[in-house]
Every structure is written in structure tokens, then in C-alpha cells.
Image (cartoon, rainbow, N blue to C red; front, side):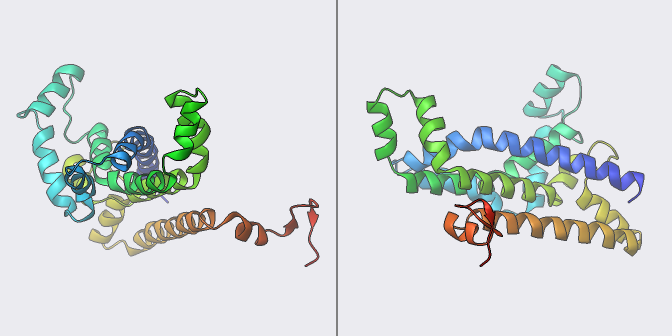
Length: 239
């Protein structure tokens, strides 16, 4: 991997990590709200959240590019506040990634909150626990696997993004050039050796991440059976 590709890797990991953190912060209360919502407008909000699942990335990227330009309000406000243009910046690809990966974080958390029900949370309230205490002492431990799944899916989906990032970030080395764009550049230049290296790296990374998600979602007893130790004795098992 040459210097340019390594730089693209660092940009990709930084973007994915920051995007995942932001998604967990905004996606958790949104998922909770949707899980508890009974209004008939719930389906409308769910459809908006899930829109990136079916919307072509270039469509979202096109409208974000317009919004991020200095000629339109979001881009104008950003430039006035920071003195820098939002379009074709690292901040732009992070914002675009958050919007594009939102359903991959919200939907697993929403399903977990719906399955959790209200009885345990209400019991905690009767015992005097506040909302934050109830979340960290009851909700989070019981839905931990779903949080791991949501974070992993959000991270993996962000790493693999191409269309949205290319539209709003361009291909600026050290700023917006990520692995998917670097791979495209190598293919366009007929440099298949480097393209193979990046492609197989992304493929292996995705497989490892998905395998880890499925393993973590196995029932605890099934996971323990796969370990080469006797949990009760703390010694290697002879079975």
C-alpha cells in the first residue's frame, strides 16, 4: 500500500469512526422515540429515516451538494461560522455519511427498544430511578447486543460509501479521498494490482465484521459452547 492509499485508509477510518459516534448520539433517542411513538405519523418518520436504503446515493449526494454550496443557506451559514466552504470538505462527507447511514443504526435500536417493552423501565421508575439512570442501568445492558450491531453496521456501511462521498467531497487527497474512491481511481488507471489489494482488504474486513456481529448475536450458551474452555471450572475442557 503506497502513501496515497494509506492516507485514504486513515481518512476512511477517521470518517467512519466519527460518523458512527454521531449516529449513536442522535440515533439512540430517535430510535427510542419511534419505538414508543403511537401517532399515525410514525410511518412517515420511519419512511424518511429509511429513505437512504432505497434512494440512489447520487440523488442524495446531488441535493446535499446544492445545500452545502455557498449559494444556499446551509452552506452560507457554515461559511459564515467557520470561514470555510462546506462542500468538498471532510465535514461535508461526515454529514453526508451520517444521513446516508442513519437507518443502519436507528432500525436495529428501534427493534430492540420495541422488544424490550415498558414493564422493566416502569419498574425502575417506581423504584425512584431517573430517566438517565433507567437507560444506563436497565435499557443499555438489555440491548447491548443491538447497540454493538447498530454501531458495527453503521461503521461498515460508512467505510463502503462511494456515491455520496464523491458527489459532496470530490477526490481531494488527505481531505476527502477515501478507500472506495482510491479503488475507483486504480481501476480507472488500469492499475489492477493495487485495485485488487484494496478490494480484498475491504472484502476481508467486511466479512470479519459481519462474522463478529453474528457471533455476538448468538445466544450466550451457544457462544460459550464454541469456546475451548470449561467456563464453570475455568480450565481447558476435555470434551
